[in-house]
Image 1 (cartoon, rainbow, N blue to C red):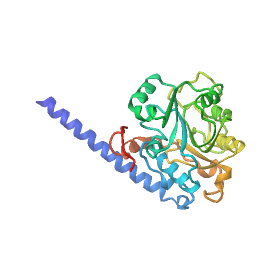
Image 2 (image 1 turned 90 degrees about the horizontal axis):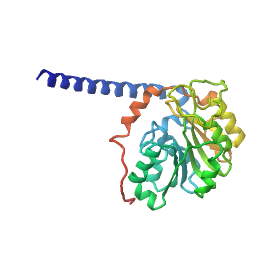
Image 3 (image 1 turned 30 degrees about the horizontal axis):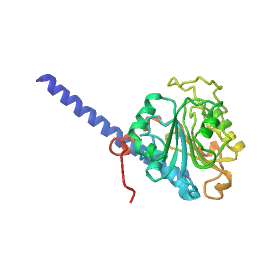
Image 4 (image 1 turned 60 degrees about the vertical axis):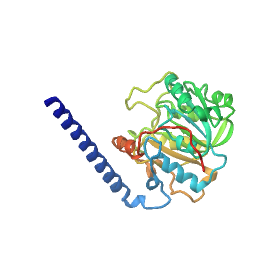
Length: 282
């Protein structure tokens, strides 16, 4: 009996601690967004929300396309994991079509089963491949993904900078890419390219925001914002920027520090556990 009582106490305590964390995290987010620099409606932080993204990326992506418009409702995402928590599932639900490239074989098997309806209808293409700067353009070509697309999301926990630098067969209007928030502007840092790199859950990955800003400028993109957890940076092709986003388009203006401790809050902010099934868009 005492064991049962102790388990009930532990369960109640854990629920209380989780509730307390959620309340504190929401209060912290509200406090951050009350800062005067975030009150400019041309900034993006205040528009963030989670549907299926890891944090608040879904809302920021929606706001960007609200401003620049949608051309062909197409996306590419690599590092799609199991598909239930990424930057493009919410778009898939809205009728977009696209390509997921995922290195994990188990993840791909899960996707083929869970997203069978989307895959069989060709709304979603899936490629199981470990991405390098030597194969990325061929992967696009093999899947008939060339020319202009609306969104490219890059999250491979390492060679992100080098892969983006190499891409030349597609012309995304918007790019979402993970940055290494350990290195604050004006720090210049790019992880040395290693075609066999896998993330070891350390701070050795990818590139600083300043280095990505410089690469973006070279490739014809402007940095227009970062999400509040300091995880992803958002770039818009310079011919689409106009006066729609806050200037200057620099890492110093948009940098967010690593607030990875907020990610568990966003994990619950999307409501019930994520899933995918047949649905009617009407």
